[in-house]
Image (cartoon, rainbow, N blue to C red; front, side, top):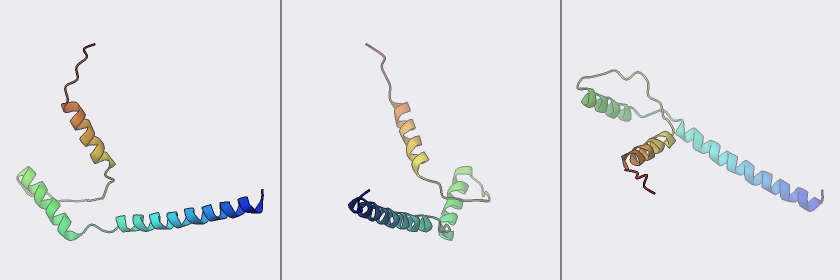
Length: 85
């Protein structure tokens, strides 16, 4: 392995380390506690839906991928597929 290859690998490793630091910072921001105002809004929405007050025991932030997947499933299920050939 030449010195040029080693230098290229070192620069790639530095770039990757920098990207990891940025991503770790974003993850730390996502793990912030949920504001109390948001919990009040959730409690009001649950009470409006159920028609009575219900205790909220746990709130946790989930990724948005499941929401988008469920939305796609709902849209695809609403389409009428024809099997004509």
